[in-house]
Length: 178
Image 1 (tube, rainbow, N blue to C red):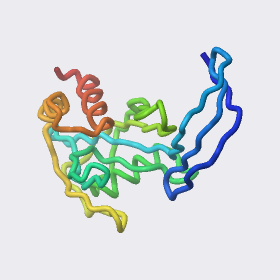
Image 2 (image 1 turned 180 degrees about the vertical axis):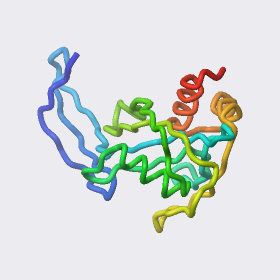
Image 3 (image 1 turned 90 degrees about the vertical axis):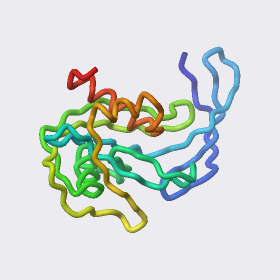
Image 4 (image 1 turned 120 degrees about the horizontal axis):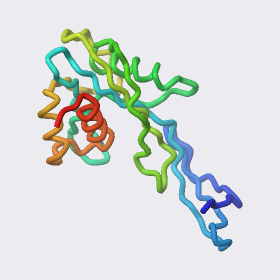
């Protein structure tokens, strides 16, 4: 089932992503090609308060021209450990510091074209949050949603972000919720 790379043609070299088109040999020996988006990967964090609320943020997502409700998340910096990224992003986007961290696996958001891997984490936080430490081009409105309500929202399409849906449902299962 493996495919073999014959040649790689760079197409776009951006600040976050790099795109190339590869000539390949398919598993059956025939020629083919693959369009590939190289992405550094990211993290997503389900942070649960003592009141069983998950911390969320509302953020405008340009490709969809809409505000999306998402769990805290962010992109890996070059050479950064994913767990350190998760800790940093949680602090930046919620003002909170997590404790009792549990890795919840990895997610490949678009494996047919993109190398992105999102590392998923669960943690507990104190109910009080500090000041947000957002990047200069980042605008997030924090929110807290009871986990049972978040599960309902994931199931009825109110949380369109894939990593948010998956992590809400994984954490609910981890906690034994129905």
